[in-house]
Length: 254
Image 1: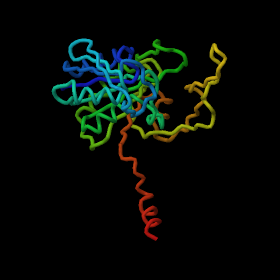
Image 2: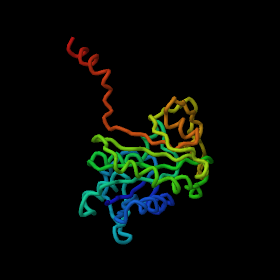
Image 3: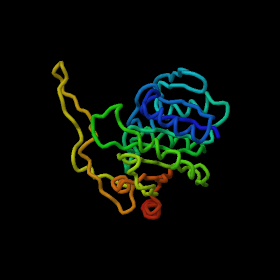
Image 4: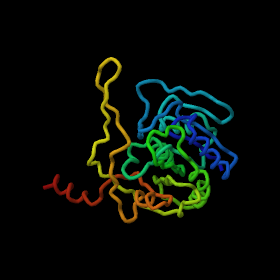
């Protein structure tokens, strides 16, 4: 099984080493193409206004000057002789839960794989404290990663779908199991914008990661993580709201 690894934290991020260790429990045919620098929050963006450059780091290993989407496109379209059988994106430093998946470069790399007709899975490690940087503990992902992935490799998946996996911020031994979930939604009632002043006296704003309330659903990914479970969420790329189609059509034909 040929596996392509990518992420949005960057080629040298600790989570990439964790992801490779997980992947090597499943196959020895591993390829890596990831952004050269951190691209967190890049979403499904594509670099169009400047050239994308590739740097090789060894056999089957590259970094890309662009986004996670660029990295997957370059790997599939230019660097790999044959398409991968599986794309794994992560292990992200931090959660990709609820509607945050729309911002996530980690999830978007898996979206690009799904668009190409390749089985694609995003993996993220939740962490409990802000400001941990590269010291985020990946123990839950390391211990449970291969166990979560094995059933997903053999499962039939509809076209244009992907899987989003999140590991809770607890020791591996305390993980209560794996729960299949729906995508949850956050309550953005409180601001997470941090205001400051730079050394030259100019005001700046920094989007923070705090101040967002969880609106827990009965079977949501947010609830599963809070309960100490690994969440496994199937996502689809068809965003059409089918229930609105009839009403909209009648509005334009009246």
